[in-house]
Amino acid sequence: MADNQTYYVPEQSKWPIIATVGLGVTLYGVASIMVNSNQGESTTGSWIMFLIGSMIMAYMLFGWFGNVIRESRSGLYSPQMDRSFRWGMSWFIFSEVMFFAAFFWAFFDASLFPDEVQQFMRLEYTGGVWPPEGIEVFRAFELPFMNTMILLLSGCTVTWAHYALINGDRQGLIQGLTITVLLGLFFTSIQAYEYSHAAFHFTDGIYPSTFFMATGFHGFHVIVGTIFLFVCLMRAIKGHFTPDHHFGFEAAAWYWHFVDVVWLFLFVCVYWLGGEA
Image (cartoon, rainbow, N blue to C red; front, side, top):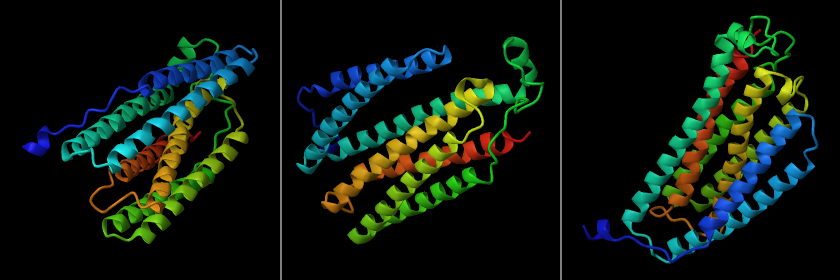
């Protein structure tokens, strides 16, 4: 009971307000980019806002998580804190599931009822089929399939790293994390190449907009997860993790497996079944 009642309360911090400002500026930049590009206006100022917001967010993350790492290594966290972190990460991943559910539903609604899309969006012509007439989609079993294999392999390597950590194999932990980070970078590079060779643009209709929102949002998560794992790699090299005290790495592994599962749904529903003419 003593452990359950022990709870570390940090001192007042500037990081929450900095996070709020950074997130607000970043989202304003993203929304402005989308609106201005759709209206054919200049997006230079919007990109500047986005970059400023991103730099504020990077500064916040570096400082805030640096504080968390120092607190953890100072022995300030009790088993109750560890349980709180696990619940917090679980609810965060659940909130991400809801985000993707919205994007998937937008895609499913348009793909299952293309006639209604054409009826209610009068500037949109689908031909009553999905994908809409005139849209040249990606072939699922080319680059998307390669990316699927890359992410599945990365899920294996991050699991290898986790088991190596549990068994006290620091070399295996570092090797597994290194390979996982490299695979994440490889995935992002292939998706960037795929986007650069797309036969459609975000503003070309309901199919391109739902496609880029779903796959692009996932791509953003891959980038975040890769950074997350890279930080864990640096901490592993410095010897921060122990077999019985490593939730920072475990949270990164949870997040990465979530990214893997979402991609499997994207591959099957968007690229394969949703991309067949």
